[in-house]
Image (cartoon, rainbow, N blue to C red; front, side):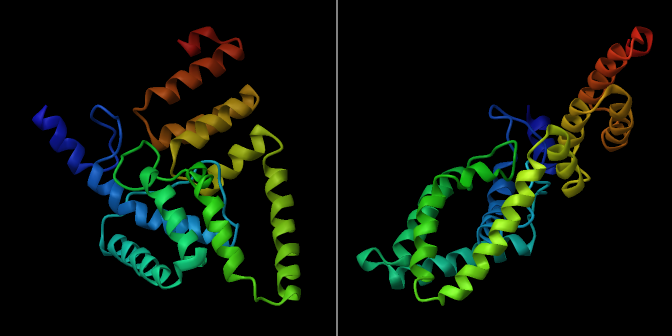
Length: 223
């Protein structure tokens, strides 16, 4: 058990322990950058993916991200009274932190964690933008509409959704597995061969290849 715990600490991204989550300290440090990424997507919704390829961040940039969030929280207290923008920003942070701080999870980043906090952050943005020229808001609305249409096209099929995820996280295994499931068997095999090069010892890849060979009518190769 001691050796297993040591191995988990040496490999922060390893899944171990009762929660099968990431090493707690590495997860906490990385969440600062993850939260900033969520804010960037809120301000400019470009770069979404169904399966982000976020890697653990434990160097000085992780501390810098948390310092930026602490500074933003401090500034928010200056506009807190009477339900001003600071109140809603801190409210959004209070809703976001339970799922994006000390509790390890298999996924470092998941856009669904912003669903509930988005209520508060949207109110914050509305108050901050209330004095912005309506013409600028109209231009921003057109840009957002174009991004919405582009994202909707990607979500139309499983194939396009997971192909986009592979493009945005080329070093991650799960998008390739999901893409292979969305493709015809003949097209799935090259994707799984790429996945095997990423994770040659992962049983998921062998399982998927066996399934594909069975669909192709090659039971011996599947075995």
